[in-house]
Length: 434
Image (cartoon, rainbow, N blue to C red; front, side, top):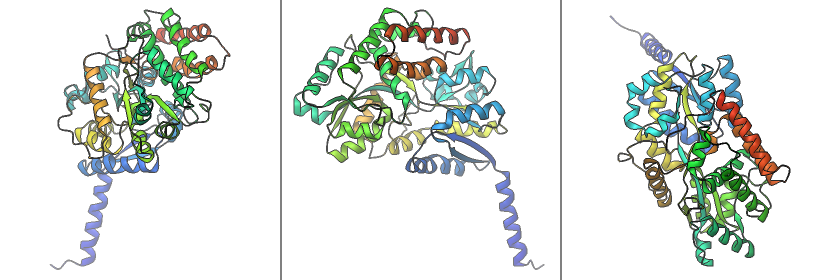
């Protein structure tokens, strides 16, 4: 029997169409990303995932700085994405409480996440004893500094707060801004410095007690923390252009060029620090933030989390995406291309292949952070452990302290009142035991 070329072509096209229709779509809304960063996600996650998972078709929709607002509205109406990407655990608790998220315990067993992910991060994704979220990355806020500038002026990387203030005062005398910092593009940058002050002055143990409701935020250790932070602001450590500088590229450029000597910020800045230091011909250093005791402070943070929408039509596909992200392959490729933003909390990094462009400073810092977390020597970032309304007030309220509109006592009284209300409503994220 002779078969026409038209019939063969039709059959091939029909088969291809049926194969495409068989693929179940998986949607994921992502935050702000530059065209270059979107390209990295396409190359290192979307394309290899779709190639390895013929049953699913992953798409990523970039929602920019409006992601949180759009996600809340969409989840309430049941029209959100399959993969729910939040700004941190403080967002997970209220969403889980309202039934918007799917419990992940069965998938955790299926994919053996307990064997692959650091236990503390699984705990931080729990609500009422069930797992609802996995952290995309874990991070810390510390102190970048211009190593070249320090060596030129015979300055030493500070270990105590007194040493920090001494070198900052020397910078002011030399016409150098001590801290490269700004919030023009991200008002939430304010809480990076509050986090550092709380952990460096009051100490992680007191912060842990406050997060558990065992110590009010109005207590003397926290008064001392905010007073010391406010003292840095008044002395000019943050410079004259804090409200007009962006928190990422402009501050990294300022430190790399030597116009600022230090940059208290998070490990997410490694990519910018590397590129701007290379451009300026300077070398950067990084240390745990100095503390009153002299021990380096590593406040533990989660920049974002993965969950699954309870109303998704494709929970297995969403789980497959999350499982793929939590793999040595993605860790290696994304951290090599986008340093600091994809520090996925895997237990074992022995099989991770890193690119040749990764800076030794990044590798060393992540190793030190992993060791600190494993040993329980970490502090607490406000965006990870405070409930949403309290965290929002902290970000806005600290500006009022800096601008002299309210006192430290008033700020902490309002902060504590908000926290106690959310603690009673069970909106506080899970707090790991010390």
